[in-house]
Length: 292
Image 1 (cartoon, rainbow, N blue to C red):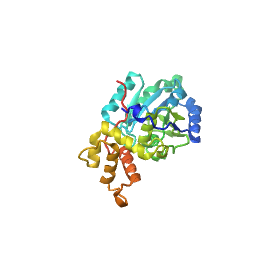
Image 2: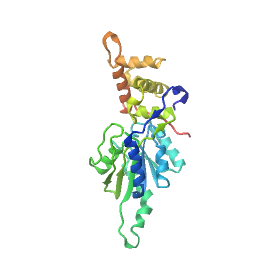
Image 3: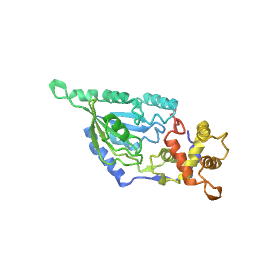
Image 4: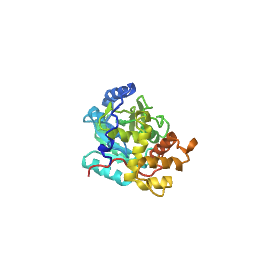
């Protein structure tokens, strides 16, 4: 949905702080303990939020794709993604972890993928055990919110900042499932600038990585091309100007972010635009669509 040629001047991101290297080692070390790997993706950016390291790390281990934050995404496009994964013979479900929606489908999918393994422990009268699932995903994709919902407590501290869950945790559920939470893991380098851009839009990487004003303007450009009514409705605009920079200024004025001399407060305007998108105040928006 974004043309790479429009963003050829974006810098290549280098991102692999020490706790990310530690997260990778933790995943590798604990894979043998689990029956299935549950990978949370952001439903708005299933491609950009799919860590290529995960596939190489888990090998042939059963793998469930979970499209989280489906409440923020374009439902029609999310359904297209579910069809896409089905064609790829990859089990997938969509959920809204924050609101606790569709979690039964998630637990059912885990059961389907682990039933054969867990039943082996009950053969010939042996004591059975819970299914063991490892939860993985990039920072800020909603792992802690999901685990808190499933466990019905605050076992995993949820914060809206990338990379705050840094140690493994076992959480036992009522539904015969033990969850092993892993720290959020990003990969060392984003070769595709559009991947880095989509991660920046959604807040998966720190805003300091890019020029935040440029990020906000590029997001406005995407929205103008794909979801124009979301902008006119949210910011009470009669029409959208041809120049995205002018739109940025108009939004600042509409929100009353004015400084002395009538100039807009750029920082406040950037923050408002990014927060409005990330919180869903601009509407249901998907940044990526599958190849049909």
